[in-house]
Amino acid sequence: MSAPERIPPRSLTPPAPAELLALGELTVRGRVREASNAVLYCTVEYEGHSAPCVYKPVAGERPLWDFPDGTLAQREVAAYEISEATGWGLVPPTVLRDGPYGQGMCQLWVEVETATGGPAGADGGPDGDGSEETGGAELLALVDGDEPGPGWKAVGYAEVGEGRTALLVHADDVRLRRLAVLDAVINNGDRKGGHLLPAAGGRLYAIDHGVTFNADDKLRTLLWGWAGEPLPDDVLEVLRRLAGELADGGPLSARLSELITGAEIEALRARVAALLRTGKHPEPSGQWPAIPWPPV
Image (cartoon, rainbow, N blue to C red; front, side, top):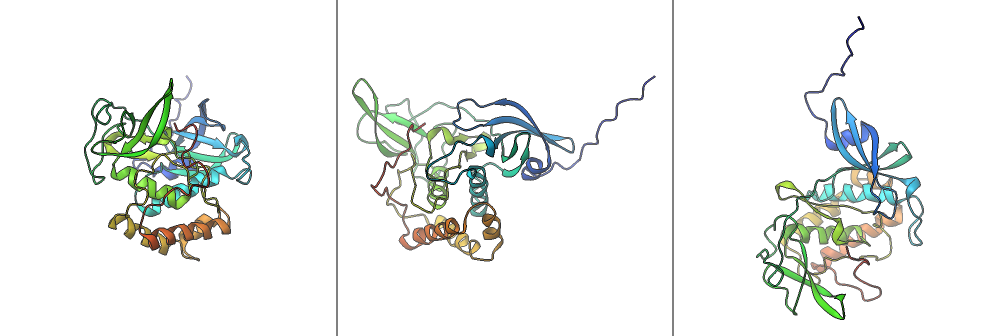
């Protein structure tokens, strides 16, 4: 009679998500084929605990003319570090680690909570002043007319086929507003609608932060609804704290120095300082398209 199979003991205390991602055994389950770079759907297991995740190996990155080759994974991790420093938790836990195809970014998989809704003229929608959270996927919409309606912010006009245009709007939602600030801080060059992940419990996550932290102004986003408006007091307080944590020699700067260049860290500090100096959401520069294409 053969000896019974030994089952590894399961830790009673689940590891923190970042620890699970960094130390767990990574197993590739499939590929997300819609992505422009290699994006692998995986599971990660550590001490009897497991979770789904996304693994983006550096070897699968497509070269870009305005970013150094092989740096997109590090920028994704740097975006997570800044998100955590703000306390807003907008970026899923993300680490840099070795995997089946070499070093890459590993990020916790987020299950999206679907919902229907929209502004007046688009099957109803939320009503708020930016201080409340809207539910489910009620974050972006296309509407007829020239006004976004209560609880929504206008972005601009979009062609919808057959010579028709519609007004692109996003929810006046505190989570989106914080994300707009985070994107301004990290200089996100590609904030699309498909990067917004409403999750259970009213959480909102944002993904795909490879084209960030460039020393040149690259901000392109769908979240221009607050452009030129004063930043809320709580956001200014977060930015003041972030400026302190970005000081040279601090632990956050030390972590970032392993992920992005010194010039990019200086530009990051300058962007935070500019937001504090103006006290306003940034506006499009007019020097290049302000909205990414395609926008979804």
